Image (cartoon, rainbow, N blue to C red; front, side, top):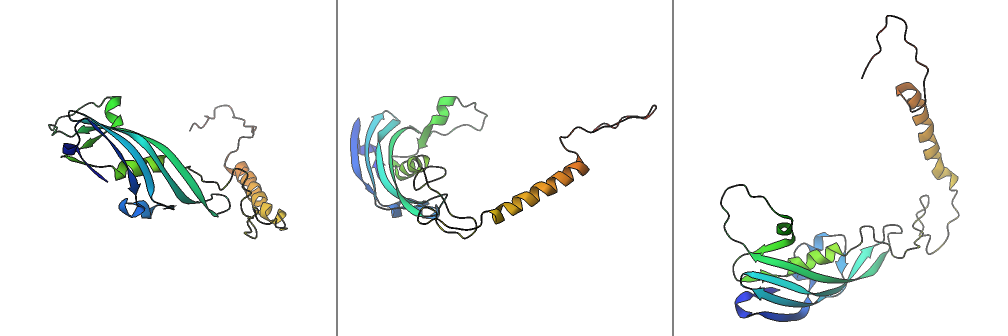
Length: 195
């Protein structure tokens, strides 16, 4: 959605929906929107500065990180963004203050809020999505979803690789140095090797 600042005196309230097809890059992520995104944003204008505050609501379709099932995930986020009109900067080095990193810049008379809203949705998504907190995941042997049915696979066979790896590392540790203490003696007149 495009905001035209020339049409706003001091402030305005924007309500509406954004379809996921209007958000650039939304199709490239590992999730999808189940419905259009709802927003209610208060726009306040102070000379060349603009403040956007409001709420965003949507429902996403995510894949569980344990059992790989797809599940709905509701997002309710708050948008609080400051925008400053971009001015030409001379080709000299500038030192940025911390507050300079917390604002966005705009050019001209129009501001596209879709990227700002989309960024807020991304920031409110879990890093490792889970369909539920007690998700049991999938069986490493047969691939059955343990939330639906309990499998009766021999779990010992999955431990075999771990045991072989530990044995290998124990043997290699003796050859290439390990954390175990070793008896080292230096003969008189022999220099100690340093790393």
